Image 1: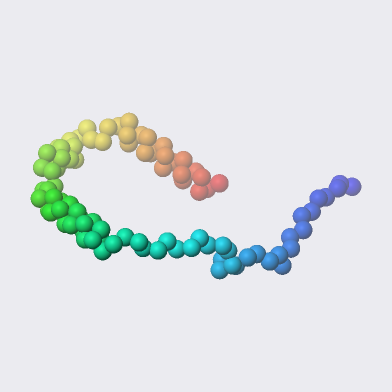
Image 2: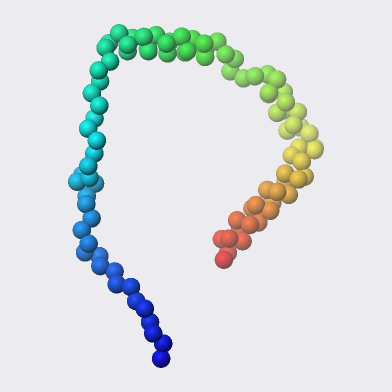
Length: 95
């Protein structure tokens, strides 16, 4: 005869609801309106600088195009590594 240990689960334990948990008081906005305007002016200059940037970097587009057209891209080592990772994930799913 073997001794069995059992665990008793009591589903009736009361757990505090989220609304009952202590929450820190909200910080009050003490910043004057002028500070808001200054921050807004700073974001305007940032937006203007971003608008002056090109939509794409031609040298990176050319580099990616060359790589995509190359028969050596991606390298065999990269393809082998991806294949191993995919095989490992497929094996995990079948266990």
